[in-house]
Amino acid sequence: MTQVPAVRSHPFDDDKLREECGIFGITGVAEAANFVALGLHALQHRGQEAGGIVSYHPEAGFQSARRFGYVRDNFTKAGLMETLPGSLSIGHVRYSTSGSKGQTAIRDVQPLFAEFAMGGCAIAHNGNLTNAEALKEELIGRGSIFQSSSDTECIIHLMARSIQSNIPERIKDALRRVEGAFSLVAMTRSKLIGVRDPRGVRPLMLGQIGEGHCLASETCAFDIIGADFLREIEPGEMVIITADGIESFFPFEKTPSRFCIFEHVYFSRPDSVIGGRSVYETRRQIGIELAREAPVDADLVCPVPDSGTPAAIGYSQESGIPYAMGIIRNQYMGRTFIEPTEHIRNMGVRLKLNINRALVRGKRIILVDDSVVRGTTSRKIKEMIIDAGASEVHFRIASPPTQWPCFYGVDTPEREKLLASTMSEEEMCKHLGVDSLRFVSLDGLYRACGEDGGRNVLDPQFCDACFSGEYPVRPADMINKGFQMKKSA
Ligand code: SF4
Image 1: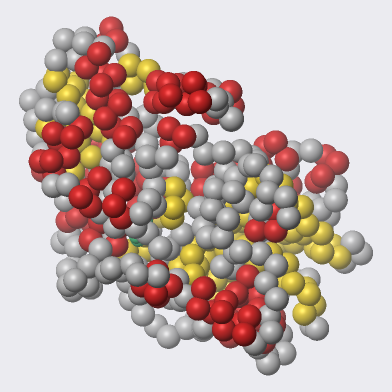
Image 2: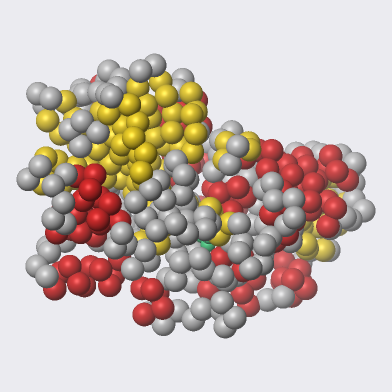
């Protein structure tokens, strides 16, 4: 199948961990697909390569559309949206969790759809299955024919092999065989279904709009359609939503929850609510913790926009050092340089960020960023700010050093490419060429996320594997490929 280039991630954005999927589903509203398009638009930060929507109408049956690129460029066209009638619909935005990473093929764009004897079922998945390759080998050995390179397709084939007589029971059967992280929205002809894995690694929220209900990765997707946020789907919970109401089940063995702490740090939008707390407020609290743990004499606190902004505000408030926008983000470059030439590519960070020269000249600057991944962007920003005349640059990072890759639905470079996996804090400071570099501690991060006593070392309250190397779900496929776990884990 021809691989069609998608809207590419910007080459100078590759110094971030990247959330790989957003999901949305709704039932009980007219023209449900239009609501899904709006919800997916609000979740676009979770995946920009491609998106898809499936809807069901009693006369038209199941209809689907999958497209490369942004939601706003595809699912706003009346001609396309008219092909997605009905009051029940789900959708997905994707970067690429597994399979054709960075080169999404249309066959990998979700929702995936399958026709069973008892009717059709569409599934959209956020997360990553850590035993998908082993399962795929087993299923192919037993005669399954895979259409995509997506780990999510394992769920469809496991459902096909289930002997249960209805789709929700087949979903439960299938999910009891998979390992890793999954938040799912699925639909049949009459049901909207939401499920979270037993550890609840990835988010899933429940909302209400009039008589209808909706499910979304983040609450910001409810705001855009005017829905009320009801509650989070709990770790290990499955909800089945029909015209008669909501049924809740807990089909998996109970296990301690391990929500991804990086959702608080970076992935989720600051206007979303997680765990009863505004993401913005949590990030501001991280800045407060940072200011307490790593104070420094300086003239200005400046965020690396946009993700460092709430933490910089918190740092400034706690330290009393004035907050200022020392770096200005060019809001429009994303549309201009979808396919940058080599020459443009070399201009790197300058295309996206510019230093507010008049402000920083002669000043001692505290730069607050959400994370350091490869360190390439941090280094360039430091060069730019020194070129602009700053007298000192102190980096303060609103997460602990990122030392380990994520296998639960987040795109991370191989371990060797993570700066903190090969260098100490002191070495990183020299490498980046800054006057000082400090990261918030794991305990400080946990406190900012509402855990006043910090991290429970015996039973951590969150997944923090990319910082600690302690993986709550054994990454079986990666271990089979030679990945070395931390010795003590
Ligand atoms: S490893 Fe890191 S990014 Fe991945 S789920 Fe855990 S906390 Fe989140």
